[in-house]
Amino acid sequence: MQESDSSAAIRARGLTRRFGDLVAVDGIDLTVRRGEVYGFLGPNGSGKSTTIRMLCGLLLPSAGEIDVLGLSIPRDAEALKLRIGYMTQKFSLYEDLTVNENLAFLAAVHDVPRAEARRRIDELLERYWLVDRRGQLAGTLSGGQKQRLALAGTVLHKPDLLFLDEPTSAVDPQSRRDFWESLFELADAGTTLLVSTHYMDEAERCMRLAILDEGRIVADGTPRELLDNLPGRTLLVESPQPRRAQQALQGFTGVIALAQVGASLRVLAKDGDELERRIDAHLREAGIEAQVRPAPPNLEDVFVVATHDPDGART
Image (cartoon, rainbow, N blue to C red):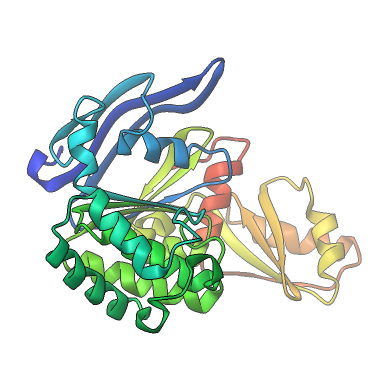
């Protein structure tokens, strides 16, 4: 059942973008509800950034319909700019301006009255732990500090919707964790967020998630729904010779993917009551000592099956 227009911050139907003979985005249907944190997960070249740029009104679609915050895009792209924030993985502020000067410049760009801008900048410097960096040149900040400054600039004009395109790709794990806490504070205040990422732990934090591959959405839902709907099963092979076990199972009938995790081997396999027994027998015949047991699936398993299964086992 379709949601009412008032419940959707983003609605796209048949969204397509071609660059010559290359189809970068291929007929995507997407609905993002107001106030949720929605994730885009996909390999490089899957169409995540191209889709976001079309939703922002920065890139014309080749086909399809886009409605963002009740505005038709690209027709109302200029009006949309006043209501959204857009943050990319590359630091895009002025490195030869101070932290305060960057924010003051952005306030002027968004026509924020001067007195209000001063109050807003003070508030954001406090919120994102930049008060003591106010007079420091942006180019001399650490990666995490630049990220927080970029987020402050993105939300300076209090947008209703944020697009964040792999915003944490250049920072350390603690900075990523702190950044996501800031995102949930924004969501709690009613801001809608669409975040693209290639980190599985970040994808798991999203309320809903779309996995993109070759310009198409190949799986979508809550992280829990994606795990519950994973086709096939996950097995763990514990062996003192995990590399030999992996080599022995390459191309084995019913095995979708293999990955060594520490001293164990994680196996994505098709459904079948006999598969666990057959894998165990195959390894013993190869002279490899191993224990094979079921393992709970994780989001990486979903990602691998959705984007790499040659037999089309996609949700």
